[in-house]
Image (cartoon, rainbow, N blue to C red; front, top):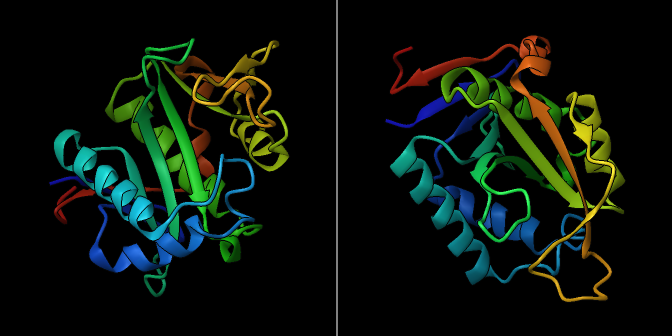
Length: 197
């Protein structure tokens, strides 16, 4: 069974049917999608959740659904993903996050990201994890810095966006296993496989 990561406040887990409606709502929110090409339709959001679920089922990790442990409220997604071959720094594994607006400003993204980084470095044995976003996405860039990631000096052109697109220029940030050295300590986690672990 796919692992479930738990931190002090959060649970990173496989996707369930009950996640689809709140996930569609956050993917339709222009505040959440401001640094992505456009909001997603309900069908596109459902298809994205299905891809996330399938990858976790096949490889045991991916972009997990994130819920608050106290009452099980769905907050969004956080996790790891193999970068597409079209990206100039591939092959690589990225960390990413997308949380509902009501969950912003409470430290959830960083708490969940540290759990995902810990899984990547200790369970998957990755040497490096990357993250990238639009040059204008200061919130995500600040989180990458808090996670200890180092920004490449030169931006890159995100290949899925056409020349001249306002979001095409992206910043790549990197974190090596040697530089990570347990930053997850600020967000204790437990890893369960079917309740055993």
